Amino acid sequence: MRWENLTLDSDHSRADSALFGADAVVTRTFDTPEFAGITFHEIRARSILNRVPGASRMPFEWTVNPYRGCTHACVYCFARKTHSYLDLDTGLGFDSQIVVKVNAPELLRRQLSSRRWQGEHIAMGTNVDCYQRAEGRYRLMPGILAALRDHANPYSILTKGTLILRDLDLLKQSSEVTDVGISVSVGFTDPELWRTVEPGTPAPERRLDVVRTLTEHGLGCGVLMAPVIPFLSDDPAQLRATVRAIAAAGATSVTPLVLHLRPGAREWFMAWLERHHPYLVRRYERLYADGAYAPKWYQRRITRQVHDLAQEYGIGPTSAGMPRRIREPEPQPAEHARPEPTQLSLI
Image (tube, rainbow, N blue to C red; front, top):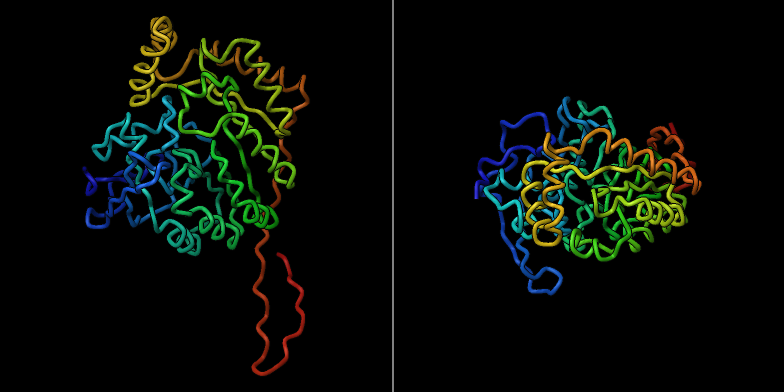
């Protein structure tokens, strides 16, 4: 395994400095049914704030990724290629060899305190899911969210995991002082398709329960309807059923995203397609003949259909976020003096 050559995350603009040394790796397995067949590689990272390359299509500049690899095992996951940087398999290896940056919370707090940091928006869940099953054991996100809250740093989370509800209080506290965006990924509601294409994720209805719960607690939650899978979840009736369920859950917005097949993911997905839907292989080869993305005409068609359905079911855009408001520390009482009640001031 090429630990010593591991570079910064794939959405970082530099690739010339190691994220950690080989002597910083501890490999563990856990004898529990939940983690059967999964190996965890615990590392102490040297950096946790990753800068997105300027040429990226992403609408954000900074990310935090406490994990590499993902037990959600989505056959289409674009992040599979990143495992090849470690000489790990991008198929089963991506699903079962999980890198855990165990010092992520303390490292982030230190980096947010740097004078060079300007409080830019930080996106999480953009590479692999920060609320995958490993988070239930390692509990990195509470420390990460607390650091972001304490610095009133705006952030967003994209997840397929229901574990985000564990951190509901931290999310609410953050929303009181900064802009917090939360999106849940639900590309379709077909249970049979879910079982084969996203075998390690919570069921779509459970993810929609997350949307419902967050909304009930005053945290607006959008849905990234991703991926819309050509010829498997793009039938008008399927799109309608999915948007209807999203609306019923109280989502503030719905954003469709058609399946894209980057190297690493493409090979794994096409092998899955050959096993489960061999009659579609030729159609996919034609649809994705020009690269990782479906043709523009197809993407526009899906976007138009979903937006029309969203309007029909009354799903509107999310409201603008609130500005950063950092709490000033409470004044310390003089020695031996009886402390008086204090009023927190906001800036």
